[in-house]
Length: 224
Image (cartoon, rainbow, N blue to C red; front, side, top):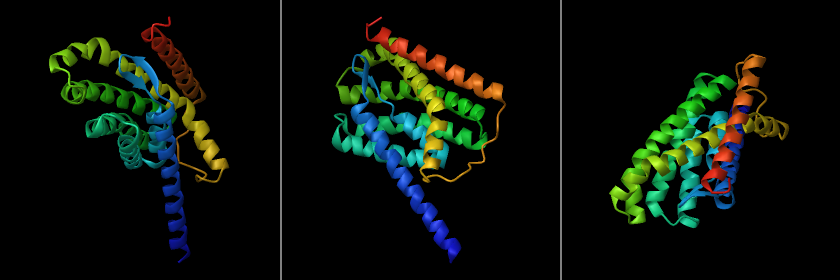
C-alpha cells in the first residue's frame, strides 16, 4: 500500500511539473517573442520543452509540445491548425530527439550530442515543411517560398537551433538544482559524471554559440 501511495505521489508531482513547464513554455511564446527577419520570430519555448524532456524523457517533451501548441493555436496564433502542426514538428524534431539521445548518454556530453542531432533534424524538417505548408497559410505561391528557403529559412532555423542549444546547455543544470531545492524533483537522475575539462568545454562552447547567435540576430535585424 505504501508503495502505491509513493507511486501516486510521484506521478502527481510529475504531472504538476509537466503542467508548470507547459505554462512556462506558453509564457515564453506569449511574451518572449523576438522578431528576427521578415515574418519570422524566435521564442525560447523549445528551451523549456527540451529541459522538460531531459528531466522526464522524450514522451514528456512530446506531451508538453502538444499542449503548448494547442493552447497557442486557440489563443494567440493566427495560423490555425497548420501553425499548430508546424510548431509540433519543429519542437519534437529538436526536443524529442535531444532528450532521447540524452536518455541513452546521460551526461553533459550526451546532452550536447543530443542537442546537435536535434538541431540538424529540426533545420532539415523545417526546410521541408516550410516548403510544403507555408504557402497554404500565407497564401503565397510555392515558388516564392522555395526562393526563400536558402536565403531566409535556412539561416533563421540555424539561428533558432543555435539559441535553443546554447540556452538549454546553460540553463539545464541551474533549473534542475532549483527544482531539487524546491523539493519538486528527486535527488538524483543517474547522470554520468563527465570530466571537468568536458564540462568546461561544453559550457564555453555554449557561451560562444549564444553570443554568436545574439550578434547574428542583431545583424539580421539591421542593428549591426
